[in-house]
Length: 508
Image 1: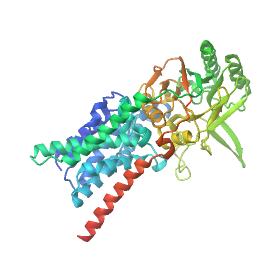
Image 2: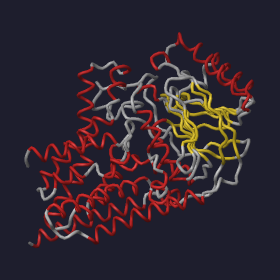
Image 3: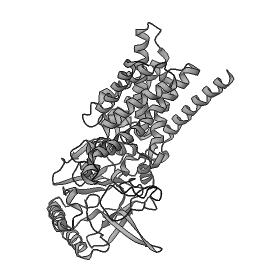
Image 4: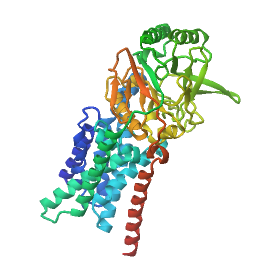
């Protein structure tokens, strides 16, 4: 390796940053890996690994820089320590780029097969594994970069977001291969190029057809109003600020009566107290619901006795105008070091990074909440649960007619994290062809159409009342029914390449 290789790999890392919000230069996604491929071409596997690690580390540092805001402002960590944690976390996440590149170089060295026929499968397999390993963190997989290119992402209702990632990597590999062939005056790889062109053409044709033929669901329509209260995070859990918090929710909710909503949605942990047992403030919520005349979905911590102790949950409640609890969902997929501490027995000195009472326990089941008027079921995803494709589609497979995501992105300040979070919500709408209602404390709150169009969205750090009409859908997509078959096929292909390479190497 030489200095040029490191510069090329670093350049790919910078390009990867630019394709996501913000600045969200989406077209760069189709060429962003070309410099890395040029650097890794015909390198030995270890060199490919190091180049992938460099590119991935730069990319992740620029993508999730916002974690330092949470750690310093709300976790009270020194700036130097929070930057150190960001770098370590970025290096870990870079492995999901470095390992596919390593394996491609390994296969290329033994089987003489180029990037175009190997990296798309191995990259997609790596993204799939990243959504599961150590509870998973599939934040801004490559396919999410195209969330505003509606014709391109409609195929996600078959392949999930992984199919879009596959196509982007395939295109990058083909562009590199063609450029390399031209520069070295070798024969163009016509078969590989034809395969790429066909894959892109079929995806676009399917997308345009889907957009043209998609029909509004014939089920019930629902008038929904999102309340974005803009409660400052540093005051949210302060007892002295509780009266003002509840007054804000009541004022905004009653202002929504002009829109005559069937359902009002407050964000995650909207009530910074236990709705089940804090009688004084529970009465404020009940009075607000009664006066509004609408059903209310809101986030609240909850608890239940368990043996000789108490379990705490991050929950969502649905309350009727008669103040009856119609449904409750306990968050299933918790945030490590945010809502609970993994391996606490081994590392007792590590604490949570968020305010709250004790560690949360995960909910026991994936269940939908039923809205009686009009009668329909809906999925309630709390905070970053929305970034897990397989989790969301399980709610839909169980009969959810639309998707609600309640969240609190105030932790991230005025960074790009809220927009990144929204971009992944868009893909959940497309994969399952369901409306997505997103209520965030400080923004970005939004309504997403089943085709991925953002119908309406709020600004960051503003009080907003967002009304909209959405429709219940019962038809399920291929992805909703069968899940990550495409990603599993990529895993199988990747394993096949590795197995074939090992067998050939052993024989030789």
